[in-house]
Image (tube, rainbow, N blue to C red; front, side, top):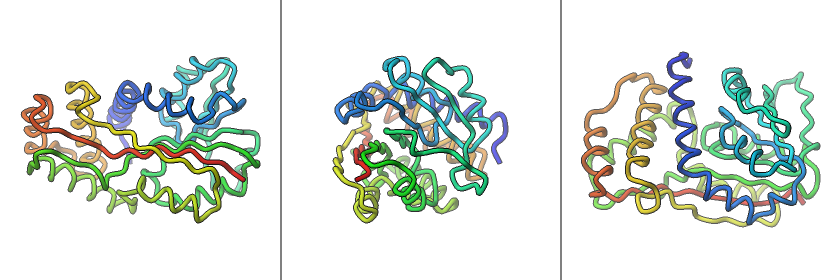
Length: 258
C-alpha cells in the first residue's frame, strides 16, 4: 500500500515526466489527429499534469481524466478547468456506468506498462467505444533500454525494474508487445513511432534525476524502502557527467476503432 509520503514522491516523478516529454508527446498527438477530436479521455490519468497541459493548449477540446485511485483524482483537482475534469472510475467495476462511447479520442500514456491486464483493457475499449475513435498509446519499451558503454550500475537498475515487474505480474516489455495485441484485437490504421528518451535529447541533470526517481519508486514499491548505492553512484558519476549514454525505448502508437 502506498503511504502519503510515497504518493507525494510519485506525484513529483509524474511532474518530471511531463517536463521531460510533453513537447515530443504533444507533437505526436498533433501529427495523429488530436485536433480532429472533440472529447478525449485520458486513461490512468495519474495526477493529471499531462492532460491538463493539453487542455490549456487545446481549449476547444473537452478532456476527461480517469483513474481508479482516489489520491490521483484528488491531485487532479488543482488542474480542473472549463475543459478538463477528473473522475474516479474503475473500468471493471460491476456498478460502473461510465460511457466510453461519448469520446472520440483515448490517450493511454505510461498506462499499459503498469497494469497486468492490458489485453482485457483493450478488449473493453474495442467493444465499448464508437467506430472511428482514435487511440494514442505511449509507453516505455524496456527491451531496448540500453547503456553505452556497459556498466554494472546500469545492470543493477535494469534488474530492479524487472524484479518489480515480475512481482506485480506486469510485462516489462509491454511497449514492445502493444502492436501485435492491437492487430489481434482488430484495431485499424495502426501507426508506430519510436520516441527515444535518451541522454542525447534530455538535459543530463533532468535525466539523472529521472533515473534516481525511477530507482527510488521501484525500490519503495518493491518493499525495499532503500536506495541502491551502486545505482546512485552510477547515475551521479556516469549519467550526470555524460560518460554513459542512456537510451530508453519508447513506443508511440496511433490507431482507430474500425
